[in-house]
Image (tube, rainbow, N blue to C red):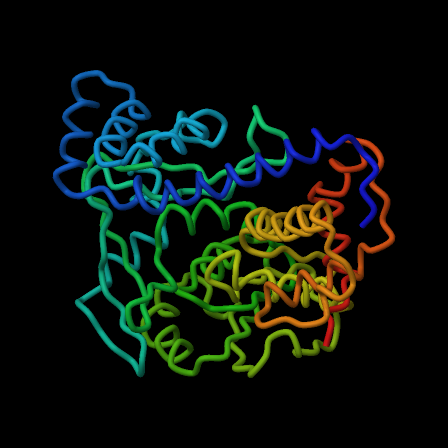
Amino acid sequence: MKLKLYQDIVEELLEENAESEIADAICNEAYFALSPLEREKVGEDIRKGTKPSEAYRKAVLSHMDEGAKEDFASVQVGFGFEEIKALDPASYLNDPYYQRVVSSFKGKRALGSWVMEMKRYEPYECFVYDEVKESSLIPSVTYSPIGFFEKTFPYPALRQGDRVYMPLIPHEMNTMAAAIKKAKGDVCTMGLGMGYFAFMASQKDEVSSLIILERDQNVIKLFKEFFLPLFDHPEKIKVLRVEDALEYVSEKPFDYLFADLHHDAVDGLPLYISLLKKEGLSKETDVWIEKAILTYFRRHVIALIEEAVSGYGDEDYKAYSDFSSRLLCSLYFHLKNVVIETEDDLNRLLSDASLKAIAKDLKLVE
């Protein structure tokens, strides 16, 4: 990559990226980790009329050292902290699939390494409730919207070991809403989970059939025994066990495909890059939390820009130890001859459309 633009523009971009990472850390280490006593104090303040963002700000600052407070001051505006809000539980409690699963749940059950159980959000416990959003104040910056419930919110979940993979929570419902709305005709979904997308899509008259591609036999068994009987239209559903959904070949293109094989943006990026290269499987394809995946991908491109400023060359991209470093090596050679002369060039390179095109054409180094 050949950078021929003013240094202050690049420095501003790198500073914004560093602040994005700081904001992520503050979410994980401060907002999401508030103790029960701290959450109780937040609730008291909010009930007295304090704005939620201010109540949480006071709580997290109370146990930060001076360095962390300085970091927080740098990202307090423009990264979503001022937008934290109470969510209406009714919109989720009244979800038809949520109601059926919860009303049919008779207690914890295990199948192989999977455990189905009820978990809950505690009052004033912070969580991400939707897809990442673009900052209205800082170009090329996205953030995760944070919300909370004022009362306990129970939800069913599937976990494997200590990791919850498939919870029926607001984030799942919100981030699948657009895909559910677009589903029509003969539909395919990669990944089964708790069947939320499959249920909601199969409810639509516009959806005539839905094939689910899933690798884990125990997840399939649990779905057929517990979840599928809750469907109004089980006749539309066909579950296929496949070792690799990306290798699946259909006799004819599906009208719509929704890929949900990943847990988060980090493990979703390799899938995303591979799926973009797959042609002829569907007329239209969407990937769960695509904007979050593109945000993660953008950070790799920005890291490459930072290394270009530091003078990195061919010899620095000859080896890798994990997927992230492999991706950087691949991006280096893919973008080696790209010339960035203006701020507009830089913004175009980092746009979602450009990143998606790069991911589709990118050849990962061997």
